[in-house]
Amino acid sequence: MSMKVEIEPNISLQQVKNEMQSGTSVMRSAHVGNLRGYNLAIAQMEIPLLLVDHNKVIQTPSDRDLIAGGDANYLAGSIVTREKVMPLKVSQLGGLSLRTEVTHPETGGLQFVDELHVSAIKEVFPATSVVTDTEYLRSQIDLAGEAVAIALQNYPELFKRVVEADGTVRTTTQAPMLYEKYGILQLNDDPKTERGVLIPNDVDIVINFIIECIRSERSTQIHLSGPDMVQYLKGSASRDQLAALYNTIHTEASFGTQLPEDIVIKLVPTAEARFVSTEPYALAIEKLFQLLEEKDALRNERATFFKSESAKDTNKKAPFLQKCKQEESRIDNILTTALTDASEIFQDSQAAPFVSQYDLLQGDTLVTLQQNINLTMHELKMVTNALSKIRRDTP
Image 1 (tube, helix red, strand yellow):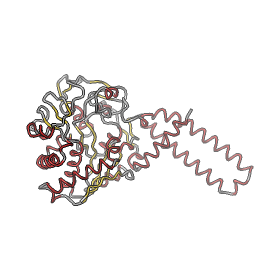
Image 2: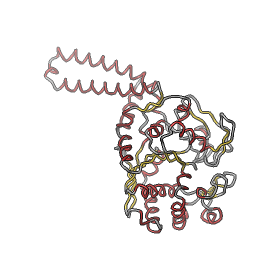
Image 3: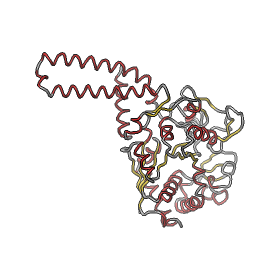
Image 4: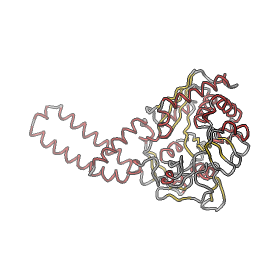
C-alpha cells in the first residue's frame, strides 16, 4: 500500500473546478487570516477552503522575527487591505488563532481571531464552503480520534506541542503522556478554553487526506496549496513520513477497509495564480498580457520575415528592421508603466499590505483574469518569470 504526493503544476484552476464537479475531492488548505489574491480567486470559483486555525497570531511581517513560527503570510492579528495593515487589539501575540481573542474594530465586542476572519470570508463568498481545521476534524470526530490514537501509539515523537488553559503554546517531550490527562485540543469538548495536546501537522494532513478519500470514494484527490506546503512536501523525508502514517492508520484503523491500498494526492501550487486584483487595478494586469502577446506577435513576424526571400533584399530588410525597432520601443515604453501599475503581482508571500477579503467587504470588486483561470500553474509561472525578467532589465 502507498500514499503518493505528486506536485502537479500542469493543471489550471478551470481544470481543477471541472474535476471537482465530476466528483473528485478538491480542497484549498490555507490559514486563518487575511487571504491574498490567489486565495481570493480560488474562493471566487467556489472551491472549498479549509483554514488552519492553529497558526500563530502576529500583526506585521516584522513580528515573525520576534515570535518563532509566527504566521506572516496571513497576519491574523491585523486587518489587511491594499492600503494598510491595521493591527487589532488581541489578547496575546503568538497565540493560536482559534484561542486568541480580538476586539472587533467596528462593534467593540470580543471575538476569537478565527471567527473574525472566517465570517468576513463567508460574507464576501457566501456560496463557497469555508471551514476551519478544528470544525473539519470535529465533523469526523470518531475517525479523527481513532487516527490520532494510532499515530500517537506508533509515532509519539511527532507530538510535541501543548496548549495551556491561558492559550500559551509550549513545546515539550511530555506531550504523549499529557495526552492521557488533557486529551487532544481540537477534539476536546471546548477547544477554545481547555488545555490540550495539538495534533502534529503531519498527522493533521494525513487525516485530511483520509477523510477526503472516504468521502469522495476515489483514490485520487486534488489539494490546492500555497508555497510553504509545496516547499515542505518537495522533500522526500516529508513525503515518506506522510506515507508511513497513512500505511499505519490504514492497517490498524477500524475504517481501514474503506481506504484503497494506494492513494494519490495531486498537490497544486496555486500561488502561481496571482493574476487577480480589484477594479481598476486589474486593468494594469490585463494590459501586461496584452503587451506580452504583442511582443510574441512581433517576434513571430520577425521570424517569418527572415525565412522569406525579402530578408535577402537590403531595400526591404532595413525598413522592416526599423519598423520592428520602433514597435518594440513602443511596446516596452507601455510595458514599463504597466509593470509599475501591476507591481502587486510580484509581491512576496510575506509582504504587506495586500488585497484581501477586507477590500471586498469595503465594496471593491474582485477581478480574476481569464488567463488566471485557464492557464496551468506552470504556464502562469512562466508568465511571471518573463515579466520579472523584463522588470529587472528595465532601467
